[in-house]
Length: 147
Image (cartoon, rainbow, N blue to C red; front, side):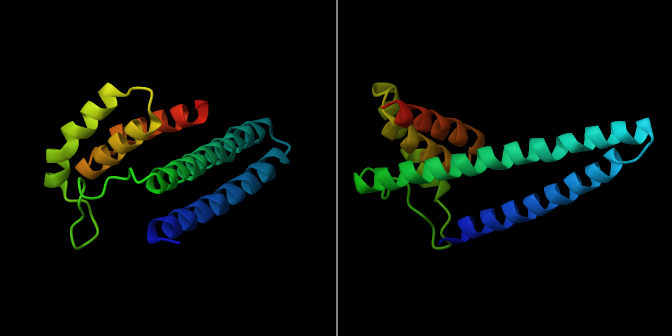
């Protein structure tokens, strides 16, 4: 298991503990006879529900993107030389920015290919644009599920 996965699981565990304590406190407020305290309990009960939904969707995203990345690697299409890493393990941003047009053109030429979208997402990530990287990976997941 790699370090980012361990960190993500640790943060998920902390969030789950926080949500459990929040749900417990909401239950305490809901058992109080005061209507105002009950209203606060109902409002507080929404937080664990929203948190659990967010945690579940992020873990599902991580699982699906990891599965597609493994499949891309098994097909030999995982960008390696195009997106080199520094000695620290971080992507070389300058090399990624130079190689980015190649991934963009590939995606424009093959808009229905989940492989192209995933490679574009990896290129966005290497360039430091996390928002667009997640968007491209979500598109790859969507196309991968429909194919």
